[in-house]
Length: 144
Length: 415
Image (cartoon, rainbow over all chains, first blue to last red; front, side, top):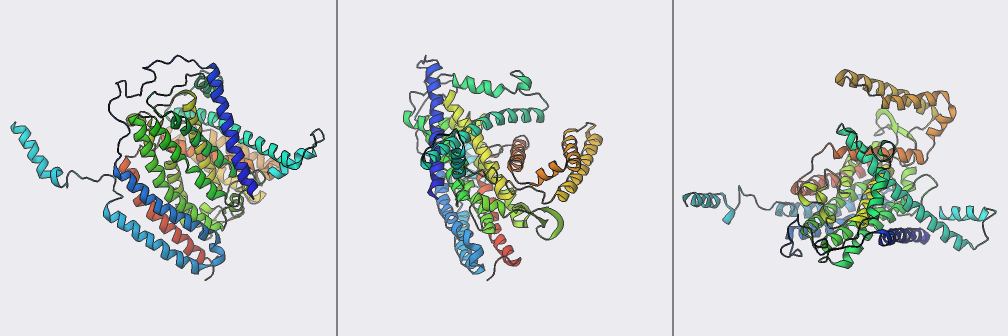
């Protein structure tokens, strides 16, 4: 049984070595005349400006959190799916309860708006993004 | 397969007498090199095929200069990439920048170990093959985020974050659809899943239309699951219409903006390796893998006649609608029909399971995904997330319950 994973591991090692061989060929035959401009970060021809490693929008982390919850659900369901035929319909009811708890979770996240990628609707925005506020600003601009 | 290969080596007269363990190690290394060669050649061929298919869909010729009909174009491209200068930006995180492509490609290659190519050829016939492939192929995300972050480039970082969010979101619907199949098959072994799809039966075991007993046609819920899996898989391998991570018109090249030469070639290789992997997985899970669609010789002959009638109707339709002669489908199906009726050997061969059938299924799926590229426009990021979490996810959960109920109703499981 472990032999199979050994095969997979060997496959990874062989793949790595063959790819590394390509790098060695490249080192031998490829040109080496780098300049500062060539090694500069690409930013559409402009000189790169500002920090790249910034704090990212929080919605990516929310998606990651939801993913972890549901991925673990899938992981838990896999063993059930394998033995489902032997154990019969009663186990399905148990799993149904498990799934419905997670469906409630999904519904909660949905209702909370965390699955919404665009958080802000200008048309129905609040605060400084509210329609009346924006209209006021435009009026001020026009007056100026 | 390793075991039988080692025994075959030992049975050869010229082969030096060695211990079984070392012969096994040799066979494992040979299989590894063979699979890597398959993946590399496959990528080179697929790039050519993709360029030609795109060209024909846009009524142009595509690559024509290098070799006859441009067949050596991608070989020339690969050589050019190998001869390019290796550029690592000074601002980039040098170590992560180097490691990223390797992680992506190795995860793509290693997943191929559990793919069954024919009833006897599976590099590693694991008992949890399907689960292994799903888990290994999700390591790609780590490599993408690593290389995108290490590039220290705004385009790369945006591409990587988008890609991570996308792959992660689509993994759950895909996992749930595969779960429905696993519940049906009662096994995670790829070959057992294929064996369970042998023979033929009515559509959904109910509508009197004889079709191969693939899981796709097994019940209405799995029929939906098949299309959901195609959508989710297209998103997971970052192909159009879900190619947001490297959308040329907005993010330059996404997470691979800073990569060039041989390092970029690794990304390209892994992209096509993943593409083929997904096609193989779809073929195995939903379309019966290496099983032949024809159960008996008589079934093969009559099905080919039906297909010939359909091809004739198609040719007539194209002729009247567009005034063009669509000859190739008619020619291929016509020739195979004649061969099946005249030569009994051919008829027997097409009813036998083997590499031919899984290759045909995989190639058709690859063509389908290439077709998608020129049919659907790219989605917006918010639409992408909407499709995954609010459309596919509820349908996938519903499908899982539906499949279980169907199994109970058809008497496959008892209380």
